Length: 82
Image: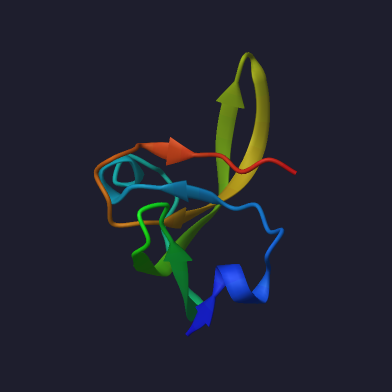
């Protein structure tokens, strides 16, 4: 298992909950190695699946995103910024 914080301190990723992802037309892939995602409250969540090439539209601008699935209910989608 790799930790996103220790391996890639400046990395920006995008995340989705399983409840939103079940509406996708994209099937998830298993990550080659699970990643530990640190939460602001101090605990970590293990992520094992990614939805690649998901179309995302924000303010009438479309892009493709790889969305890592986090088993949480506190959000729908988090888009990372470069």
